[in-house]
Image (cartoon, rainbow, N blue to C red; front, side, top):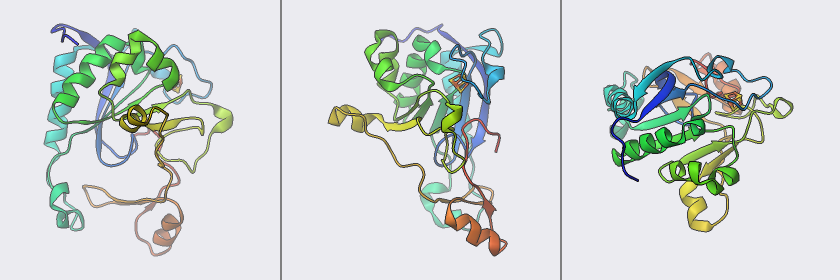
Length: 229
Ligand code: SF4
């Protein structure tokens, strides 16, 4: 793909430190605009295509990478034991809104970020099978590591799931999907224990009750993409 220097993208906000928009510590960017209109959507403020901020794709990529690289040494005594977790990361999540409603900008952004060594998660209200068959959206899939697909369906909501809202939404490993020629999904719902960079302990599943009983850590029933913590 030729990189268009002045391509722009409409975004709502950047969240520099997120533990809810996919596993691990991540920088998240929320695209502005979504025409899907799921009932019960928690991001209605992002539906309008008129709001937010218009930025050059090149500038946005630079801002996201700078936020990753800014992630300083951990203040947690636990995390300090792990050398590879002591400094910045390049874990980036693109959410919305609907990122695939700006497909050229999304493709250009993911290309730049992937070239810089980022691990990319993208959330979409569309399903993978439709995106991969549409030439306008298929290009952007090439550089994404994990695609979380499908609309939010209020009747399939479950508070025990991690990082998404309803059971139909699949965390798809795109490299494995391409390799095996079938949709390969990841298990994001195993009990987790996360020690954040500032020393908080986040626990889900049975671990949450045990730690909470000992007065340690925060019990988390399920982290939802787009939440603020
Ligand atoms: S796709 Fe996402 S942002 Fe769009 S309406 Fe559905 S839940 Fe909301």
